Image (cartoon, rainbow, N blue to C red; front, side, top):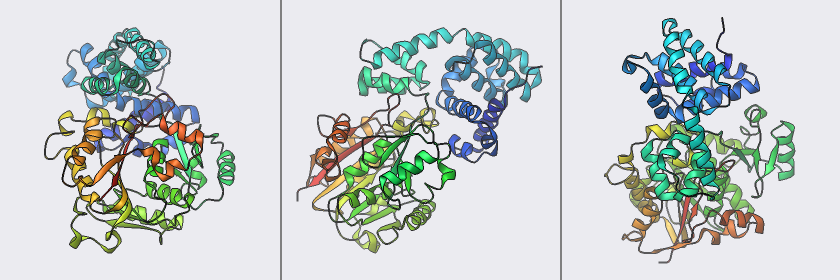
Length: 481
């Protein structure tokens, strides 16, 4: 009798743990001993299955429910197994017979009497593969700009995204960019690293990356590489020592936009300190002594950031304070590190994360369209509050930089425009990100690459593309009075 492969059984166990704990897939995979025991090829398959099922969960359920007589009665473990198998049948290049057989064995492993039902359901789902392939081909052609008339249904089927999200991407990004984003939705996200402040020269870091078979290639930004393989990065010590920082290429660009040629930076939404490291290095490259004051609402992240700055040798140059960014205008409440004015204020706003769904696949089906904008407790309302409060800390002549990892206008340009139309924004003007010191100082080739992501208003707007970085937004506002 056939048995399910270790990669598939590992993926199924992780999906089950994720469902029970309501945890993030990547966090579970990172800490799973079973994943470490798999060979490189098997580990890649398990990763692809776990992330893919998360991205396309709703689309997979739609297919499963259409062929199961009593879908609501399916045990959660059986549904997990059917989702995993349906994803492989519909989206991967595994031969049909193998994918169906392995799916049946997965179901048999959790509920033996459901194996016959699984065989019938998966064979009928496999009959839908042509429909998915046709949609994928149409989307890939649309991404090249050769054909127009792509539909949101085709985008949804190719990416696994909810219909409303696919429709919104089409409306806001246009056919070509929406198609490009959806065509790579189920692909692994590229791994990018940047040289840290604790590191030696770029040549030395490159040599160490080559030494762990990461196969680094330059991105065009100084001290920045894309890795073909990040499998040995964690165990190499390069990240823990802060010799390199793992950061998407678009996030690296945002930090260069926010880095001033002199003075201090206030980072609102410091998180675990990745952008703090990148800001410090960008300021150092501009000949400016790094001085970053970071505020973060989550205490555990503040502790992690402080520890990271200590390991990077930046404790005296980067502060990490637990503080609510919406209270930055309240001078009486400010801790000493956040007092006074700053030459640059970076608002790394909490957002939907729609630009990073390849890395965080739970986002697509967890998003509530109604929570994005309009309501008092919506994301855009919080983003506007943070931007208004942070603006009070910008020195005259200084810059307010607003950034998200979303591709949706209600979190990006609309928030910026609402701020500029408000009393708090009356002393600010929108300026091109290309004029930021950290971008102006780049080599011509690197500036050209950044400019490809800058719109006609001078705002940075990257969108995920096959083999390319995540979607990020960044606007630069100069205080004139």
